[in-house]
Structure formats: C-alpha cells, structure tokens
Length: 458
Image 1 (cartoon, rainbow, N blue to C red):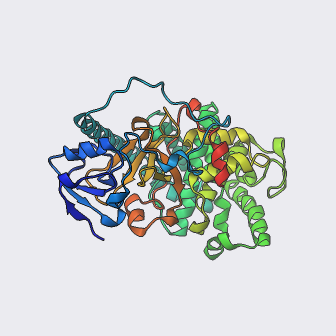
Image 2: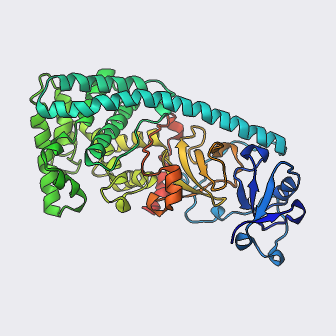
C-alpha cells in the first residue's frame, strides 16, 4: 500500500512514517522509520517545514501500542547476528558515560549539516586520490603487455607504478582513501584490478610491518606481477577458473607461477625478491601448496604476505559472485581457518588495515536500514562511518552516519551479501562495482580480537 498523507495531530507510536522535505529539515537519521519512542513522537509533532505520510501496512495497529519508552529495545541487543565482541566475551568498551544531556532538534540538525560538509570534504579528497590512482591504472595496463613481450621498459614502468603507490599510501589521510577503481566484467579488467588490489594491500602491510621503502617496493613489485603467468593461458581457460576440476586446478596452480618466472626473467635486473613472490605465492606454510610443496622457512617473507592478500581478494571476488564472501567473512576465514597455511602476522596486519567491517561492506542497521561502510572509525572499530540507503532521500543529500556519534541503540546488526540486495539498492550503492580499501592506522582498534566471534558466521 502506498504512503497516505498524515496530519501531525494523528501521529502516534507504532506508525511507519515518511518525512517529505529536506534531510536538514528534521533531526532524524533517515526520512522513513517507525515511531518507537515518546521523544521521537514529540519531535515529529514539532516539525513545521515538512509533510508527513504513513504506511498502513508497515505500521502497528492502533490497539497494539505499547507504553512509550525513551529507549526502545532493538533486536540487535539479543540477536545472535549482532556485531562481534572481544575474545574475552566482553563487549568492546565504550567511552565513559557522561551526564545525560538531551540534544535539541536544532542541535541535531546542525550536526547533520556538519556531517554533510565533512562528507563533501572527504569526497573531494577521494577524488584527488582517485585522480592519482587513475594515472597508475593507465600506466599499469600497458606494463603488463610490456612484460609479456619482454620489453625492458616494462620493469621501469612497473617500478614507477609501485613508487607512485608508495607515495600515495605514505600520506596518512591518503592511506584511508579509495584505492581501487570501478570494476569491469571484462576478463582483462578483472585480472588487472586483482593485480592492483593485491599490490596495494601488500604495500600497506609492508609499511605496517616497518619494512624499508626499498624492501616494500620489491614486495609490491612481486605482488603486482604475482599472477602474470596466467596470461599465458587462453582466455577461455581463464574464464573457467571457477569451475575447474581438482586436477585442472592443481595443474593451473603449479604451472602459472613457472610461466610467470619465465616471463620476468627476460627483463634485466628484475629483483630476485619479487621473482620469489611470483614463484611461491601459491605455496603454503604446512607444505600443502604449489608448485613444490615448500614449508614455512623455505618460503620467502614477501611471498608469505602476498599469499594472504591474494587469498583475501580471491575469497571476496570469486568468478561466480554467489560464492564470494563478504569482506568480514573473508577476514574471519583467514584469521580462524588459515592458521596452519598462511602467515599469521600478515593476516593480523591485513585486519589492522581493513578493520572488522572493511569499507565496501554492506550492512544491516538496527533501524532496519541498509548501508555501505565508507571508512574505518579509528575510535571504535565496531561503529564505522556508513552511507545509508534511504529510498525517500534526495540524491543530493547523502545520509552519512558516523555510528560512533549516534545513540548506542543504532548499530550494525549484520553484514549483507551483495547478491541479496535488490537491483535498485545495488544500483544506488554500487556494491559489486566499487572495491574500496581503507586501512585503519590504529593497532589498538584493529578489530583482530572481534573476529573470534564474527568467525562463527563463516
């Protein structure tokens, strides 16, 4: 049933309402919601510059109203899918309680204006970093062909790409900015974006582990070309990667590192450390990997890092999207299930970069809204900054919430698989087309411990 006009005098608890007007004309986080507290009811009755509507189908019957409460109890408080806790079983500590002081509607609206201005500045910064990264992409598309052809300039260009990425990520604010491009369904684009994702995250881990710049750039160079040997295979075979038989996959994992080494060996002065990454990135610490079954200390430290990042990106971007894990699931899987196969220090560092809910994660909120995480909140890893989808909001007034500044009853309930969203919401939030990596620079807020509980969903 469509929304029905509503006069302010008919407002009551339990109505599912829509506010027609600017997002800044009212103090609520979204333009549509169910009235659940006397405080919200009183605020709505005082609004003057909006039109009100209600949805009879989503509203509680009038006789079913409960007693007004200032603090409604949300399902998130008892839901088994609630956000994770620390390994001790205790909730992540919040800031000490301050004396109760109610914000006025005017204060709340001003906060929304400030949030929107902050977001506009943040978006502008993303554009600047994105422009720098676009230059890297344009150079990178040519470098792969140069390496395949054995042209020496391929190494020089690749070293420039890695150096440019290092410079971008060496600036604290930049390291939290968007590092990847809009995806493509074309196989060559998917291959190249995977290479850049693995290169970027490997570089971040190298910086986090305090490697020298020279060492970090050699690591990133190996990461950029870790899968270059795949380009020796016919395109139709690469398209079948997700449906290979066990024997086909074993052969593929064994042979493409060999092809990759042969290709870069033709380039004068290609660093030995980077060649070892290409050769060993499918080995595993317990000897179960390919092509030679090397173990632990037999594997280079750089290859151990690229193993982790490569596995993470593959888990998130399977050839069949329905099999892809959401970022939080992928991190949980690495942390809990890969202790014997992947280097734990590199896994922990990756989690520090991405947080419990990595940017790009789609989430359900306790107010029944859907959002996409845009940035890790360094002050509280479980309460990131989220861009909210609201079907009734103006596209010019983005609803961006810093959950750390919202009431505790507004929280993330669970993460969402992109394939479970409607086409309309997918189009708005672009969950499959935009791959966002924003590292968290605060080890204390890394979210590693919280993954113990989160792993139960994997």
